[in-house]
Amino acid sequence: MTTNRFDYPKTFTMKGETLTLTQWAKRFDVDVNLVRDRVFGCAWPLLRALTEPVMSNGERHAKRKAKAALIAKLSAAFGPRKTVRLRFPARNQTRGDTVV
Image (cartoon, rainbow, N blue to C red; front, top):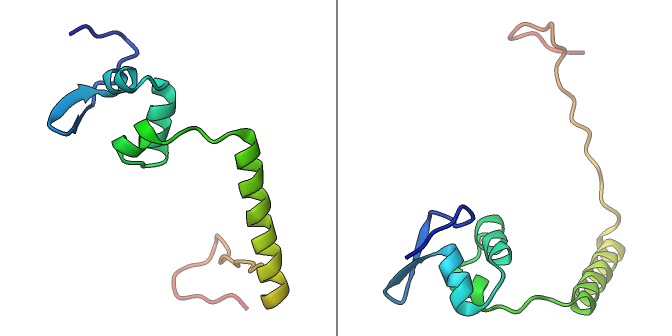
């Protein structure tokens, strides 16, 4: 088994077989960076990261548009979002003092 400097040292076991992330990506013919981002960045299970197809720009746009429409619908039903301003105590305050 050969390794290179781009190989991720963590091994993953799936269906009784243990391989590195790079080896799994090669086996499923998927870009290793995509698999790495899905597994470590999005916390996807390995099987999903290897088998789920990449979303096209059209699909991504449709998903964003549907989400925006849902937010607009909820905003119309419940009113606009209210922002809350947090007020922090002054820095020179001692414990137990209150700000008026």
